[in-house]
Amino acid sequence: MFINRETDYAIRIVRNLHHEDLSQIESIVQKENISLTMAHKVCRQLKKKDIINSKSGVNGGYHLNKPLEDISLFDVYGAMNDVVAINDCLIDVENCPFAKSDICKVHHELNRVQAILLEELKSKSIAELI
Image (cartoon, rainbow, N blue to C red):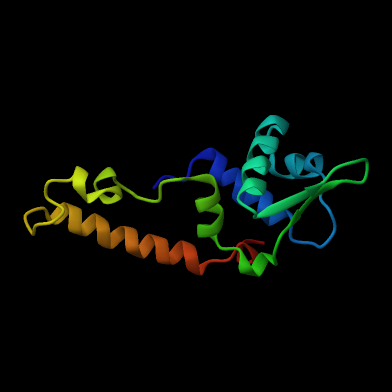
């Protein structure tokens, strides 16, 4: 699991949509120092995963599909990343010859750490980051 730049930007974009009005992308990129190209790319992904929606036109912009309190860091991370694992051996146990045995304490420890990390991401709403 790695929070890359796009995921960081996604969290910042969602955080900026905390009010009920439509937010124009130009306003968000200025506040968060994100390039317009990157912001559009991130917003397309967030829209595809149903985190945000948009209205086109002169008075258009982006808005949340549900209250900010109901969107967790994990929701945004999951919208931006297909894989939610801190190590390849945790993605598919068939790729790790030690996963099914007690031989590899590294695998078991990484699994424990990943569970804690996922729980923390799920427990923190984006609203708490305003």
